[in-house]
Amino acid sequence: MCRFIETIRIDGGVVRNLAYHERRLNDTRTHFWPESTGLQLTDFLPPIPENGRHRLRIVYGRCGIEEVTCTPYILRPVRSLALISANDIGYTYKSADRKALNQLFAQRGSCDDILIVRQRLLTDTSIANIALFDGKRWYTPQHPLLKGTKRAELLDKGILTEKNIRMEDLPSYSTVRLFNAMTDWGELELSVRHLQPIF
Image 1 (cartoon, rainbow, N blue to C red):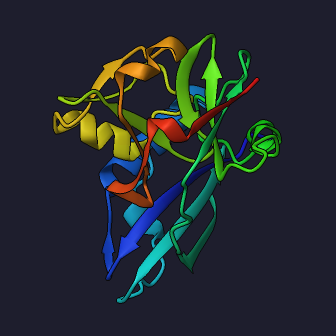
Image 2 (cartoon, rainbow, N blue to C red):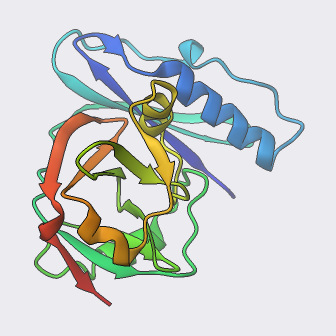
């Protein structure tokens, strides 16, 4: 049975980007189960912690919301990325089944995380979307593995521009940023020099 997840950030009692998560959840349900009715996430929120950063994890499927958990969140530092080729991998929908991603992550060697390359195009890390800076603008891969909610927000605000970024384009960029629902824009950043090819 297909199960999907939404991971939502709670900061000091504030639920972040709820509308983006709700839209993706309902789009996913409509894709897999066209007969499904739309859900409002506010109907399923647990008591919201007033202090600190927390991760709200919502698991859902054909019949609706199946599980809701809320746990404290600590940002994991990323100082290096292993470039891993995976031409056939797909993760268009935020599935609870991360087996393929975990297998790639296990190949990272001494690096903190991986950056997945599909058909010579950069996509995502194991848990985050990316953006690269060319000295003037921030570009994010036009075809990521997963179109994250934070990515959608940054595109809507004009902070990011979509672009195909090839392996051979890397020398044109100085910096890579990692971001997702739990990681703010600018919170995780490293030099492109810390990307290590492992093919």
